[in-house]
Figure 1 (cartoon, helix red, strand yellow):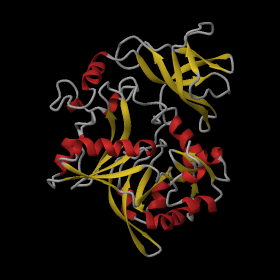
Figure 2 (figure 1 turned 90 degrees about the vertical axis):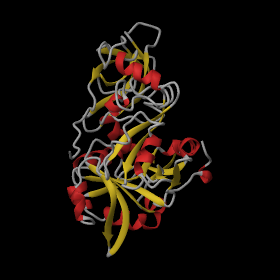
Figure 3 (figure 1 turned 90 degrees about the horizontal axis):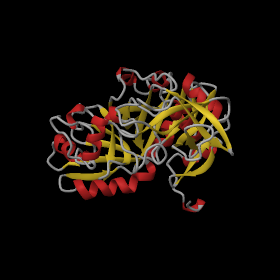
Length: 387
């Protein structure tokens, strides 16, 4: 862990402190884990109204093709990810995965087609590694341009559209995974932003890339709206857990394949066996084989019986008496929207596709006790994305 004085700060640090944010170290940054309202209220407010998150610690990178043709940047990026990047329409974005030679996941990311270049958002903890990966393999064809002078905000919840439309009426016409440059007008000032209709809460919402110098102006204007509360990392985590979304370094990492992680939906047909551009990415032999025959473990949703949450790293057992763990919890906590504990983790299964054969019941060991869990479909809540 870095010493507090070595932590980086986002452009909104002073605003967090002024609003009573409880600051904690996260991925090398000093970030608000919660505000005075508290995690529970922040979580429920996001589901009912609109919450504003500072995600400026994440990496924003422009991938600019030296040829001037965005297709060349897309083809280049396809050598590092199993997704169909060429197929991303202009002003749309797609979820993608950097993979390694054994089929493991190096990071998950968002890739948008901005017409003449690709705009990429990566996880904070993987920023330097991802940038190095892009430089190592794509420097011949692309200019790798980290946008370190930009902040990133997420406005999430059912009232996000009506709030953001007061600054840019045209955002109301956007649908889930639309992305591109937008002008937001704040106090008579035109801010050059990139806006996508996306997020990591399971709610409708927007992610807004804004010049760092304008971040406090925009965040303050959004927070001045009566429907908006500032939301910290605590509620961000419980919201994404209820939505069944992976947290890199916890639910997915270099040892988990996309198929084991139940992320095969993100791999389009064109990159699979028999597809026009099948393979050609790191770990393709492993991943393509698993897409056809399945993996021997699977990330699944789990609901503990009773009220006690089961936390990350708790070992999972096949029954209440066995001594050898068969899996482990990767994310777990209380789901405020469900008023019950929820978790996800990895359990063994026969080598068939999907979740067929995963045991309906397992047991987690918590403080020396075996707590029963039932297999549950994810997401745990109903997603409200605007399609």
